[in-house]
Length: 263
Image (cartoon, rainbow, N blue to C red; front, top):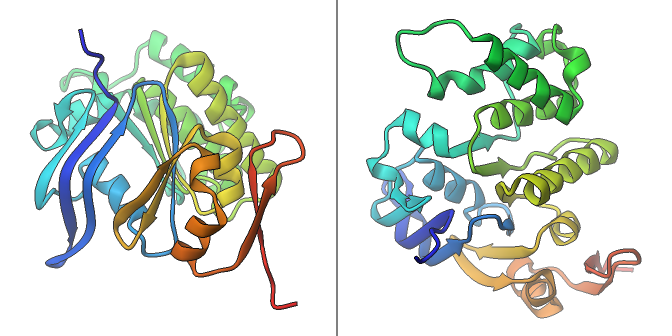
């Protein structure tokens, strides 16, 4: 039996207000992969995430998650297959534990309004895994940006999906929180087999953590492959319009991008 891909896109065209912002002839993310999507501002990264999660409809083509066409799935069915963590987590004064427990909503019968003891235990297990358990009684709007991201990942895990889509989860965070969140994400991928699609601006973090990169350029995939195949001076300079030097990282050996200043 042919294995089902986590994400499969064919002949996709979509956008906003009558304008095509994304044109993807073919894109496949196998189950269990850790893929980073990179590209300059306006290249279509967030639009791609919204198309995959069903937030914006396909004008043409198809998007499938776990072999099922997104357009044909109900909101609850999509939420049972795919969890999304956005760069901005808005949750108001709700407690961290109640916020994380919202991840169980797609799995509940419509007539059931309260969580079970098993659901609470599962949510607390995920809060402990992400390191946010000690803040479970605190309001979400009193947390730092990094803490809110950890709570959002805990909720995504409590949603119990096989695919995790993170849209700029490290934006505006200090380096300690960036490393903590990406280390956790990679561990979830390795140990739990969760398929990860990471949208990220930082080329060096993308190279360090991902096994496969997709470089978008003006709404189209320019090149995809391993970090070594994608992060070359020719590819980076042609897409970003900036001169760079690329050397192996001192610890992992992965490509490390150094911008060339006017000096």
